Amino acid sequence: MRRKFVAGNWKMHGSLAENQTLLSQLARGLKGSESLDIAVFATAPYLFQCKSLLASTPLNWGAQNMSQYSQGAYTGEVSAQMLQDFSCKYVIVGHSERREIFSENNSVVADKFAQALKAGVTPILCVGESLQQRESGVAEAIISEQIQAVLNVVGVSGFAHSVIAYEPVWAIGTGKTASPEQAQEMHAAIRAQLAKENENIAANMQILYGGSVKPGNAADIFAKPDVDGALVGGASLNANDFIQICKAAS
Ligand code: 13P
Image (cartoon, rainbow, N blue to C red):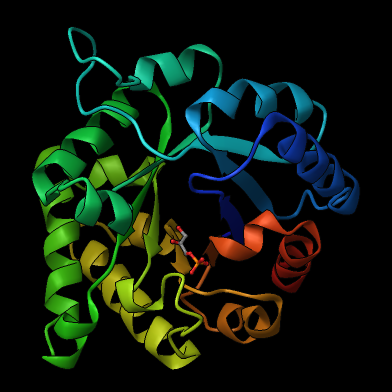
């Protein structure tokens, strides 16, 4: 039985004061939600704040990005080992904003995924197609390629300790969410791709949906059998919204 997982990607937002308010509201509002996996993803300077404020709560925290290299002269980068050093549990790899704005291709994303695994940090692999790709009927092929690139590097066993987030690019920050049916269709395709390699790993894989998830649409999306939760952007910055989305999943 897969647990539901609600993750909040704060992107490049927050401050010490804002985070403190948000984290304490979440800790209060999400007491007793141990049946659910919940995590917030702050920018690197605030990870330590998340660690200390969430220490005795059921909430986890993770990083939004990391280096594909393990160590060395890579100014400005943060390694998976550094994340692991202070018990960071998760790291997002391959978010479409990283792929598009920072030119991360499938091979870089696969290297990051592999580094995270090696350090013992659970990667959350983001995959997603653009609007143009969806309209030209290649959405499934694009997602399959994005997953295959990681399979090629870590093998299916690498996926036993990971999470996948399907985030159609056209639904991110646009207020235009994929319909529950569109999400289900892609999640089932992702699970089927993994099942070809290992049925058990596929059956246990948490596959999250991301793209304009709000309190008003979360329950319908979570009702789909292959949707195991959400990676929430904008709505994760508002404590009430995020708490309501978590409640819809529990
Ligand atoms: P929004 O929920 O703001 O659309 O962002 C989704 C996302 O990119 C989460 O990683």
